[in-house]
Length: 420
Image 1: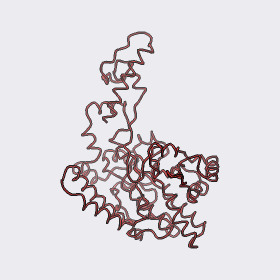
Image 2: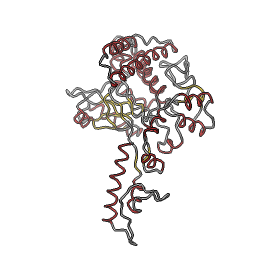
Image 3: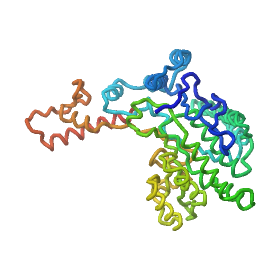
Image 4: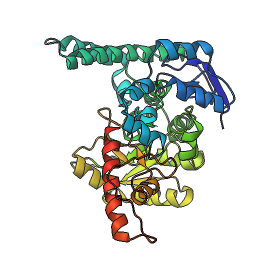
């Protein structure tokens, strides 16, 4: 259930001041709001969605917020409904298609959160300012849009720097040690989940990257193995605390309050080198230290060529915790021809920091079958959903007739699905 809910403050990168779990003992800091497990509202996606989610949890959206996002600020949800055709609306409202863009079009996102630790905010802003400088005439619609988007990116980077200041962190510079590397990566991810609650806000492949900093500090006697593991443990604790405000209809589909903070562990480079590091082991070890958990979604990029010790450890962790999922790394790299990728949501390949995926809708195949039987009419309302479907008049259903109608129905539903 929902422990706490801020129904007044619109969640942005800088909307809430610093929040802590145990300030004196936290090595990695940062919460989505100013209080542990306090959920925030994100009405830019849709004010009605937020209103319903709040109401279902026993509170109402602040009237000022409701007024602004109803009368003055068009939301993503509003734009999608403006674009829907009457046919799409009908298929949606009668339950033939669900999970459509009005709720899910923020999609699956994996930012390259490593860049903040590697370069620091100041260098990233410089690069984006150079991009903006080079986007010039002819000022086509595409270039105007691109200039606006890059300008928004610069603003967001500046806000991430302010977020760091809330916690006494100088994110303007690159990370200089293991603790900063973990912290910097987390702050980049935290900024994303403060601003977005897309269908999946996955992590990418940060374990192999963070190992560089951890191993350097170990080699130079700055930290010991116990401290290295504690850094990873505390990072995982923070990722487990991520919460989004959802409607009950969302929770009915996705049990367990999932956030799909998917960390892709291991795998290989196209040249044959392994991406397995000691920190790959450390991430999996958290399932023992902290106990099994579905979040973050530990996903091993599996290949028969992975180091034997790692494969054996994965097998043992799976036996003991049932908390690892596996993806075919060899197949992924071959099909996509890219080895710097992560798993978005639960199973989908995505190049890190370069792509988003629009969340696919769902078709109610049982209702589609009823259309095939009932002459293309909705079984509840009698509305004609698919034209030119012969009515089956016999006392018994004939498989060939039903199958022929069913294929026609699916073809039309697929067309509407594609448009939606």
